[in-house]
Length: 177
Image (cartoon, rainbow, N blue to C red; front, side, top):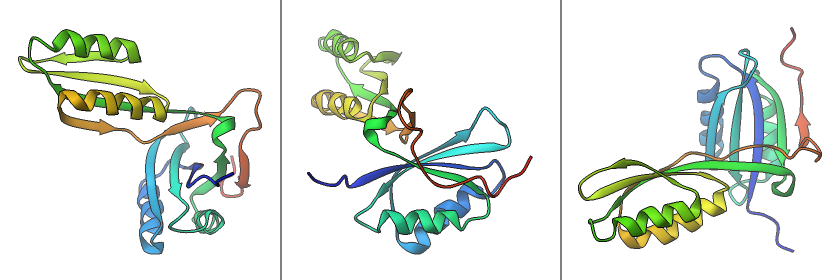
C-alpha cells in the first residue's frame, strides 16, 4: 500500500496578529511545500484553526510537526487521517457559455450539487462545496465548457464523529485560561 503524499494537519493557534505569517515563514524558510492552507477563528475567540495540507515529499512529516511545535503561539497540532476526518473545500468557477449551452451547464451543476450564483450574457459563475475529490471531478467535467476563472479554498477538516479525534502530536502547553 502506498503512503499518502499529502497529510492534513489541524493546528490550533492563538488568535493574534502575525501568527499566520510566522507559520507561513517557517514553511518558506525550511523549504516545506504547502499543498493547501485555510485559517479561521474557532468558536473560542482566543483561538484560530489552521488546516494545512503538507506535501511530505518536500520534507518528512515528523520534521514539519517538530518545527511547528516550536512556534510559541501554536497550542495544539493534530494529524487528521483521511479515513477518520471529514474534509471539505469550496470552489467558485466562471464558465464561458453561450445561450445554447447554458442549460447544459446548469444541469451539470445540479448533478454535482453546485449552485449557479451569477449569470452574465456569455458566462455563469458556479459554486460547489464538498469533498476535494468531488471538486476535482466537477472541475474536470466543467473544463470542456471553457473556464474563465477558477478559485478554490484550502481544505478544512474535522475528525469524524465516533472516530478518534486525530493523532494529537503536540498539545495545549502554550495557553492557560
